[in-house]
Amino acid sequence: MDECLPLYGTRLREAMRTVSGETMRILVVDDSSTMRRIIIRTLTNIGYSDCVEAGNGREGVDKLASGPVGLIITDWNMPEMSGVEFIRAVRANEQTKHIPALMVTTNASQDDIAQAMAAGVNNYLVKPFTPDSIKEKIQHALKSAQAA
Image 1 (spheres, rainbow, N blue to C red):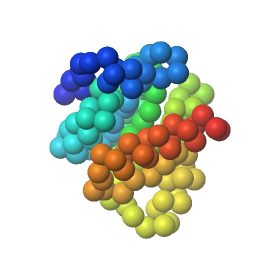
Image 2 (cartoon, rainbow, N blue to C red):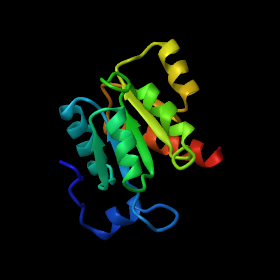
Image 3 (cartoon, one colour):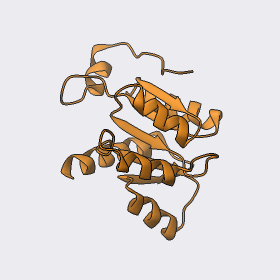
Image 4 (cartoon, rainbow, N blue to C red):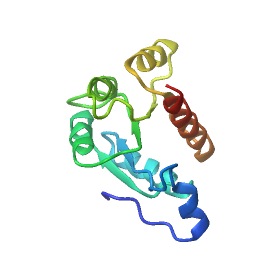
């Protein structure tokens, strides 16, 4: 599933538009294909239907090079390149450093949250999550990125 299924209806499409009038593409990075499907289904249900996915941070870097992304949602624990390493790579790249990032992970300690924030995530969500909680965290991540 490389892209989320499209949503129909004017109000849903309007809700997905960014300030520029374009649909926001979300990159979902997680080594679990099941978790990627859950996140993408949740995103679709809350109005974000343009999604691309990657199985680890290295694939995520490749996806960022292949087209514009308006938000990154990444797991922490992944092979090849962890979520924290991925975010550091995103922030070190002049082309991608501005993209808001949300970490969605099972790592729940204050030290983990502090480490992720220091790496450059805009917000942090512990699994399991609800549609309302991910929607709230996405909105906060987008606002904090705009303020930066």
